[in-house]
Amino acid sequence: MLPQVAQIDNLRYGIFLEMKRIFLFIISIVAGLGLTAALTFAVTQWLRPPALHGLVMQPQQPAYNFTLMSHYGQTVSLSDFRGKWVMIYFGYIACPDVCPATLAELNKALLLLGKQSEKVQVVMITVDPERDTKE
Image 1 (cartoon, rainbow, N blue to C red):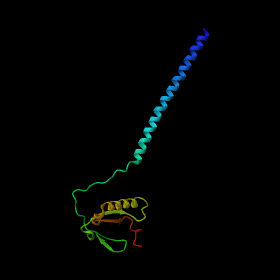
Image 2 (image 1 turned 60 degrees about the horizontal axis):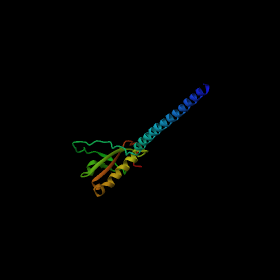
Image 3 (image 1 turned 120 degrees about the vertical axis):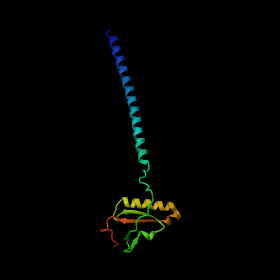
Image 4 (image 1 turned 45 degrees about the vertical axis):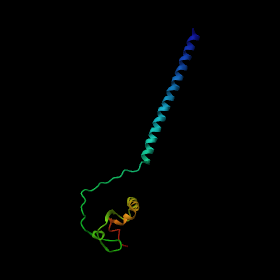
């Protein structure tokens, strides 16, 4: 009788090992699929171009004239650019990251306009006049 009990125990242990192996295989597949999904999501988010943020001002209204000093020390008025679209950017010369990147984007936009870019004037107005001097 003892040998039959041993055989049954061996059979149960064999079934247990087989079930454990199948369980680990299924867990590995699920974990692999989860990791693949997470990496796919992360890469697609990383490669997605940033969304454009902004708003369209309606109705269009003419801006009031103003006069400022240029980096050459000359006075410049908004009316000097009459007949052109004026894009005003507020920044400062020592700006380390956002200002150069934004001005580069404005430059790309002007290049895309081609000859029509002659109808556009980009004006940068400093927000740090104490450091941004004509010197």
